[in-house]
Amino acid sequence: MMWNSHLGFGSLSKGLHWVGALLIIAMFGLGAAAVQYPLDTPEQMAAKWQFFAVHKTIGVCAFFYGALRLIFMLVQVKPQPLVQHGATEIFVARTVHWLLTLLMILVPLAGWVRHASLPGFAPLYLPFGDTLPFVPADPQLSEMASMVHFGFVVLLGLTVVLHISGAFKHHFWDRDDTLRRMLPGTRGETNVQSAAPLVLPLALALTFVAVVAWIAIANTPLV
Image: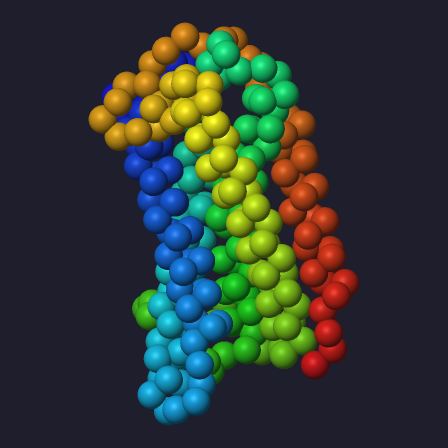
């Protein structure tokens, strides 16, 4: 089954989910390695440069992935929750899903603005250059984008922890089909309940994003 149904996820949704997981692991891993790598020798400086360049390049790819995932999420049927899930559980899960989708766009976008507004360090390995339309070379803008990027990274990390914890809780504690629904090669079609689309999870996710961005901007130092 390629497309979603009300009962389960199609192969395209499953593929996008696991590609996103790999992108998040790559971005977190390379970002942490780039920040922590020492600068004591010219060889170390060159290696740190490469870490940042690959991290930024994967980040830009993640931005386009996030945009594609958002479009796919909006046009595809949303599988209904399992009958075992309560209203609060469904609300939290949908808020987390919206956060994951939005942050897969906003985290790399903030990093891309930071890179484009302070060119010259660790260029992108992509054919369209290192600048962005309407983004001037401005150290203050770069610092602000860096703060927003970091705030979104922290929020994404917390969201991923919640997402994984929920999946494990359903699989090992509740012993339901939540995780199996997203595994490749499984139909994952099981007893579901009829649940109306909720606007509040999206509103709450947007609120979290806005608050984190505001805190980051308000605490941006002058350069």
